Image (cartoon, helix red, strand yellow):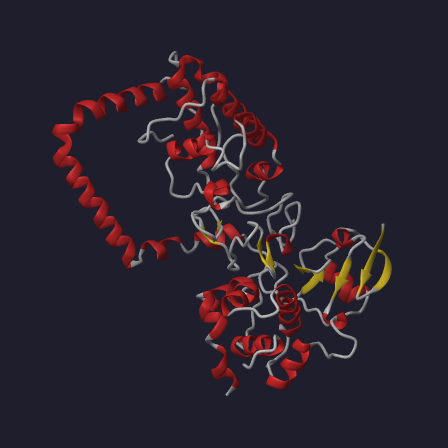
Length: 152
Length: 270
């Protein structure tokens, strides 16, 4: 079956099983490997992408749900890695191993879109589904505040 | 020094990162059965023994008062017990049919008994888990807080980045085992059932201020046909469904409304 969707602003017509997880479509069919596979159960947040602006876990989202919708991945967040979050991430040296960080940034990007100056509570609530085994949580919070225009 | 940076912050705010991590790594095992594994440890918490001592004290006080209050209480309890005894026995995963209650001659008592039977569904974890007291939905047969940690948010559908639909699809995810149904969300705060008696739930279900502005007819329709309600009987492998079927439950609620939508006594339990 063919599904049509926009991925990072580009229309794609894909001959895939609509039950295939969106994460497989992104990584294996389109080669967009910035989005990671972590737990496969929507428990870790490594596969976070935006679907029509809403945060979804691509590992449990059937490709068919994305029909006619806009998918945004870490590769499409900015054309040159210049999103305020990406800059803050670099400036503060947030990642350690880095595996979870694309998911962390995508969730943080959705948070800042809705709450441009988030409180600590809003940051904690929104980021609660993104695990970091290296424990970079404090730097993540600092970088979100920095990207929001505050001083960490 | 990066490692030293990492343990606090969000992880501490969440309360218990390591447990979540190990669950996240657990692969495809049954979420409910993982949850059940925590049961004994929870019971062993000091808070439980204090609560248990409180219950014991209450029992002692009630026992001491028994000679004074026994006549009126035992009369009502006898009535209730006699009514229950007149109904056909059913397995814990079944519901009595609405017709089974025809044996109760008094319409008011029959109506209360019908609601009490329906409350076996309402108070089942599959239903209570999304009618929590407070802002955090529950999970599993033992009704632990939802993992990962979520809150109801402004529209009862989560907060940005943690919306219900970010993980829950319009149907159960077969392989990942994330439960799903159309319009997955938490019941509004005023529709909390957790910790309430059947009578309290009955009264709030009839109250348009606490039932989403629904008429009794709409309540019947919602219970009998809503797809999210229906998920309670089709929760996917490894999760215990609510007793009976949605059709039987809907018929009980309809019969309750037809008999005057009376509420059972405060002490009555199914």
